[in-house]
Image 1 (tube, one colour):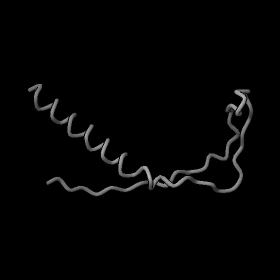
Image 2 (tube, one colour):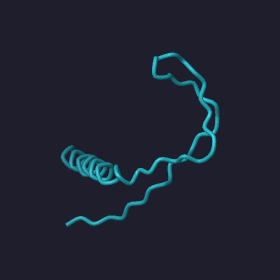
Image 3 (tube, helix red, strand yellow):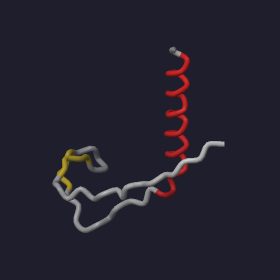
Length: 66
């Protein structure tokens, strides 16, 4: 078994004006107001699983190359 701890930094709202596209594809300027940070919790498990798999594969390939 492999055990490890996981922590997530809260996703921050970017208050700087940014170029983006609207629903019609036109370029617009967007500036967030307030704090509307998304919750990454629903995506946490697949994110951790993918990162763990990539890390294990990296170590496997490193060991195989020696």
